[in-house]
Length: 131
Image 1 (tube, one colour):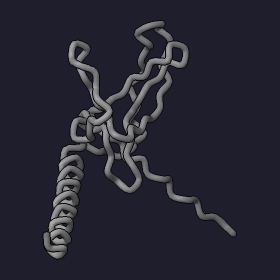
Image 2: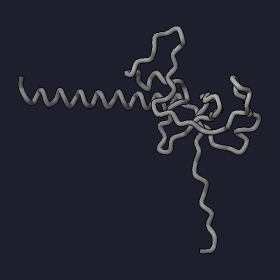
Image 3: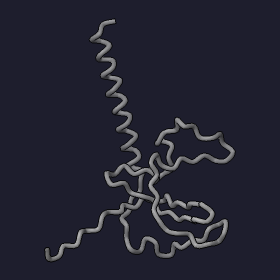
Image 4: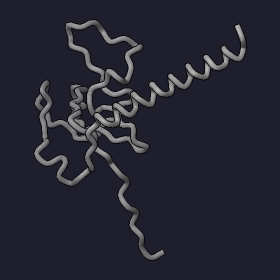
């Protein structure tokens, strides 16, 4: 086969792969619901552990590939599952990633995650004082 044709075939395959990746990223960005971190975000959100009834500790969770869920009666998740299967609002494509609200029971090692939205936690402005 002609090396020129092989080269163009490889270039077109690479462009197609990049286009698919771009499409997946844009789809995730559009479907994510991101809100700002506000002082009222945690109001009325104190929960107890369902196993031991102790108060859950409030915090944040960042999920790399997102949360990928399968029902108990379905087959186990494969290591080849991709981010397109992630639950809504569990992947942040921002430069400074947004996180999910989470509650943790240190005693039972249970984690409760709210994936109704992502929270953009921005750095507080630095205080400038006399130098």
